[in-house]
Length: 214
Picture 1 (cartoon, rainbow, N blue to C red):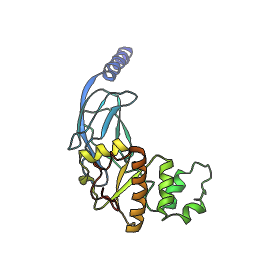
Picture 2 (cartoon, rainbow, N blue to C red):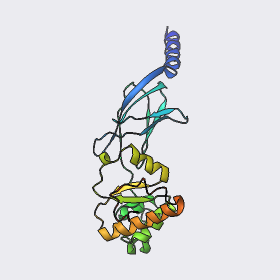
Picture 3 (spheres, helix red, strand yellow):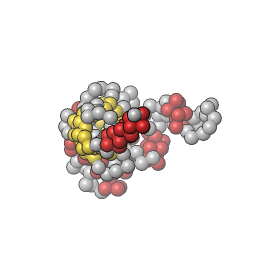
Picture 4 (cartoon, helix red, strand yellow):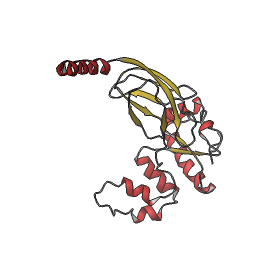
């Protein structure tokens, strides 16, 4: 009897593992609770997946015990094993490289074994230098455009497509001074003009700080 029970449990596990189910849910901003339209929902190690709709909702056919990867531009990706039909996901923003100088941010990312690793003197001296920050970001293939009064609700489908097409990221002005924002944006605009000629000008947001209208 014991062997029969073990065999039954084993067979049930095999059947459950390959069982096809429909998973649905909503992907939201973990900080604001707002939906994330266009977020990617993909089965781990495959090309099968979908994107969330305008309300952040998704529906996907998967196998029970598959692992789903949820991702969105500027957000930290999240992996979740499928064990139920409804999976709600909250994604949180990655610490942006272009944010105000934060020693803890740099310490977490410097790949050294010593727990006492400190930031460089150059980082500290150039904490509010837009040119230094731009070059540092560019080395990591990060290009930022600061726009006024930006919230996640302000970004429509056209804006999201612009970010993807030209590999840029819109950012709110935060606590930066207007002079800093103008200088930083001009460096980004110079990069766009050099790489994409004038094709980007007709698609840029009108409220980009310091943009010279052409």
